[in-house]
Length: 231
Ligand SMILES: [Zn+2]
Image 1: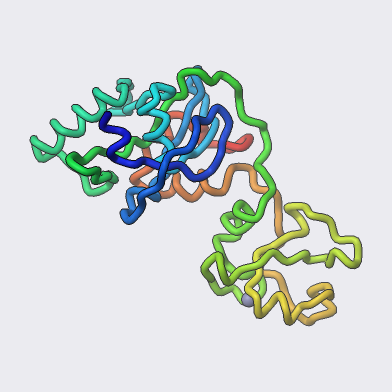
Image 2: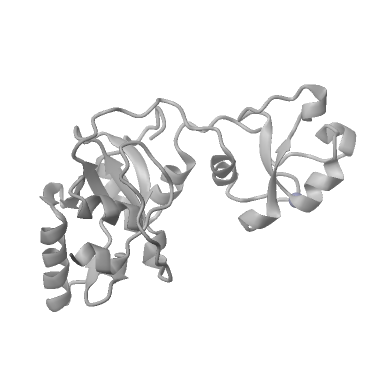
């Protein structure tokens, strides 16, 4: 089986998921995002590309290809053939991501459809560390500098010790230095200013970020232009 030789892997654990496989990384294509639709073509999740391939290989998902307003679907075998033809004819586009397996290359699909999943996502964006960092674009909300995830922390604007809640409106991204400097004080007490008032995002911050990139333009066919929920 081709899929097992490619050692596709998965990362996050979304709904309707398949069991995990072994991991092999090393290519930026492995970091590419794949939009997952439910059976009724409603966007429900974003997968890493290894996870998406894992679902494709197991027959739990199909590729949905968007080309000038036309949709075509592919199972893993026909997507592999599609990739092979594209490669042969020299039709690869610089915006695409390709994964190199042991003896073949395959294009990373932008959109897949989960064939056995028909639930719809919650209409709210999940409040968690990753999404706060994405909302704030990995930028410390006090010194305005951007940092890697390892050098960032979550700061409670109104400190927890003073009853500050874990909410979108009270938690921001802060670098370790600013977080220590602020300590258990309010910004006013610490003489620090927030870059902007923190708010609950209307759309999943990862979706918002990817939609700005041309390589994820295929997502626009399935995601409403005006955000009114998680997607
Ligand atoms: Zn800072």
